[in-house]
Length: 167
Ligand code: FES
Ligand code: FES
Image (cartoon, rainbow, N blue to C red; front, side, top):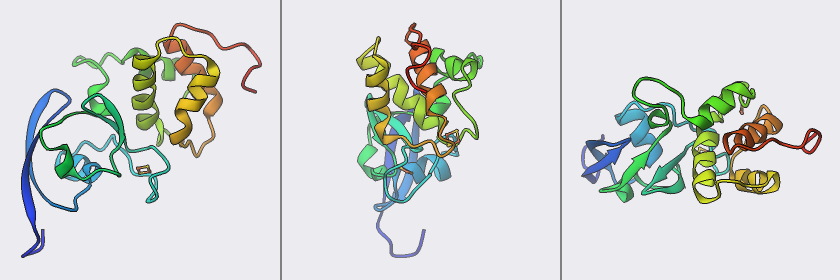
């Protein structure tokens, strides 16, 4: 932090654990998570707020963490991909479905996809394929693995995708 820059102390709960930090007012939430807390599962894939690789939950709401200042999350409950699996490493149903249905290639978009899928299934436990695709609008997969990502999310919701629907 450069001398003379305004900074502030903050406290938030991240994946159920209380954390504190000191940031500049302009520090983005994604940078606080990655650089200060070393939670590097939240990725940065663009500088235009388009890719969704940085998606987390803040107070239960889906947020692209590159669009929010860390200071704005002061006092909030934040969930990142590191909190998705159980303490013993057992994958969440969504993570398992991504693994089972090959819903990832390079994996760069995957944390954001999983966090977005978790939010979708909380709001809408049995989405249609169309609803899944619409909900993923803010998440870009540069490997273009959308078919299997959608298939994985449908599977995580206990549904199968019609065989040819997304080809
Ligand atoms: S890094 Fe946040 S949307 Fe791309
Ligand atoms: S799996 Fe490579 S960007 Fe989605």
